[in-house]
Structures are given as structure tokens and as C-alpha cells.
Image 1 (spheres, helix red, strand yellow):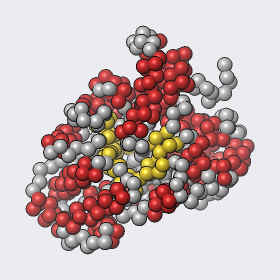
Image 2 (spheres, rainbow, N blue to C red):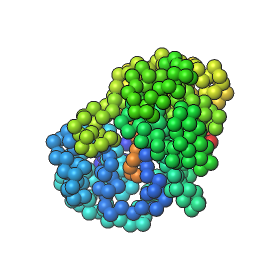
Image 3 (cartoon, helix red, strand yellow):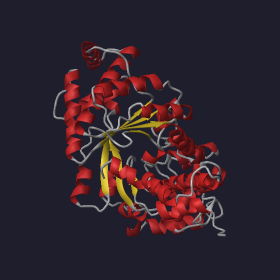
Image 4 (tube, rainbow, N blue to C red):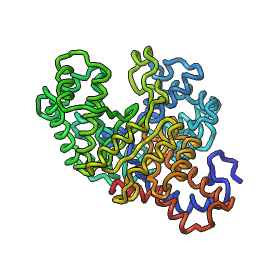
Length: 466
């Protein structure tokens, strides 16, 4: 048996799991249908100066762990040297045992850099020098990092005001990896947010129109959807605490938007009505264009007001929320379905207490028109770890068809995050292999292997029409 921590049968506990992974999953290409990679860095085929720039900068998972250990912010997001930031991350790594960061860290070192040593204070200097020398070469440019993991399709996330110039450049260059974008219009929805009116002004400029009325707003969003569609976009994404669904009249929504544009205060009830209206409008438009819509639900964001003020959003101050989900989500999906305007939909859940809610909800709207039309998305953010993935897959299996599942995505800003697909695939194969061993599934490798291949790759390829 190998003495390496990361070895061929890592996380695979019996011969059935090993056969499923190595024969049916391991070599499947990656379709990463939602992430936050920079299209500019892909277009420019960026070469990083050292490992910190590509691995630690921007990674709020690592930042939270470092802060918990008591490492000063100077070595996290501050002005310390890149090497000192890496050394402090290396110091943190042994303390991350039983957090997915420990597995991800060593998978990423192994898969990208052939480094199998455990990262800690003792090995840190050697690994930093060895890996940074590799990173700072053409072989480890952003495009080549994607090639190393057999990425076939990656889908970044852009605001409606984005010019998509880098996506246009990527298409012009005929990159062998398909790079798509998803449309993320949350700033146009969340009317109570600070800076809403200035954002609407920016949206108007990008759509070459003045936005004074609610109809103007809808026209501007439709123009941007059309622009994104013409530039190869076929996916949207929303990061919301919950689906909004309040009863409203058209005149109410027009009046609420007018008040906001006149810088008058709006009530929380008015905000919810507006958010409900614009969400329905967007969802019906996505159906018109044949897009896939994604909803990431349940995050409680920016909890630490002091640190949010200093560092801004997406810097590691978010957590799981406990919002009510079922009734509003049901009403939203039902309203769209009743008009036959429900497009392919993925629901991601952040609170594990709601797993069974989501797993049963999707079954209400799978109408036979498309295989797996409404999906329960894979465990994400705080749940994209072994326990979270298994709980999501068990809920989906018990109450739906895991065979129709479109599998894993990174939802990451890091070019080194793609071994999370391997992590997911190993966990999937071990879950099924264990049930074959116990006699809960038949030893039918041909069929179960096909199911593994479908979840790893084929279902997503079909679903997103890659």
C-alpha cells in the first residue's frame, strides 16, 4: 500500500468503489458550469509570479481558517509578502484536518504540481520554492491549468453591465476549452441595497437607454440578456437568501421603482414585492431564450460589519442562514409552470436542514419534458465537503433520481480548485461501492458504471447542451 496521503485509491474503501472511479469516472472531462474565474485572466493566458498569487489570494476559505488560528490579517489579505502569506498558510494547514481544506490542499498540490509531501511549517519553504518555480512558467498559465485537469467547459459569472470583451476575445482565439458566461443580475433585483440607483444608472449606460421607469428597467435587462445570448451565454445565476414571492400589482411595482429613483425610502414590504416582480420577469425571459436558471439559496452574508467595512464583500464573513424556503419557492416555480414558462432550473441549498425540502420540491416540477429539468444542485460553499455532498446525494437518491443528477461544480475563484471534481467523484464512487459491497445495490458494474459516468459528465453535457 502506498505511503502517500494522496494515492490512487484515496477515499475509495473497497474494490467496487475503485473500479467505478478508475473505469467510469476518473478520465471523464470536466464540465464546470458555474464558477467565478476571471475571464480576463483566461483570455490573457496569465502566468502567475508565484503560488500565493494563484492559490491564496482571493480564497476566503483559506482566509477564514488562517484567521481562526489567530494569524494577523497582514498575512491574510494585508501587505505581507507573497512568501510570508504562503508560509502562514502552510502553518495553518495541519490545523485544518477534518476540514475539506486539508483534502483540497493536498489534492491540488498533487494534481497540478506532483507534490505529495504534506504541507506544514517544516515543508513550507521547499514547497514554496518548488511550486512557485513551476507556476512562473508557460506550462502553468491559466489556460494550461485548465488543460491539466481536462476541463472541457467552464462557465464564469458576469454582471449585466459587463462588456464581455474577454469572452469575445476567447471565442475569437478559438480556445480549445469552451468558456461560457452566466448572467448575474442580483444588483438590479435587490432594491434595498446601498448604491442601487447608481447601479441602475450604470445598467442604463450599458444598455444604451435611460432608466426612469420600471418598464425602462425591464427593457434594459432584456437588452442585456439579448446581448449576453448573442455572445454565447445560455445560463444565469442568482445568489439570494431565499426566493421572493409576494402578491403585487403592476401599478404597485411601477410606483415602488419610481419612489426609489426619486431617492425616497421604500419599506421592506415594498422591496419584497419589487424583488418578486423582477424575479418573475427575469425567469420568464430566461425561458424565452431557452437558458438554464440557477438559484443559490440560503447564505447569510456580510455578518461582520466591521470587517466588511474594511475589506468589502466576499472576504470570508458569510455563513449559513435559516430562512424559510419551501412556500415561496413552490409558489415561484408554480407561477412559472402554470404559464409553461419554467425553464431548466437548478436549486442549490446552503442549509442542510432544507435538503429534503429541496429534493422533494424539484420533483413537483419535473414534467417529463426534459430529463432532470429541475435539479437539486450539488452541495455548495459550506456543504461542498464529504459529509455535505453525501447528505445532498442521499436526499436526492431517497426522494428523486440521482441517476439524472448533473454533478459537481467548483463555484470558485481559484484556477487550482478543479480537483474538487475529483473529490466529488471519489465520494460518489465510494458511496455506491459501499452499497454494492453491502448488497444494497447489485454488482452490475456496467449499469452502475454508466450511472457514474452520467453523473460525472454526460448528464451535465446534455443538460447544458455543451
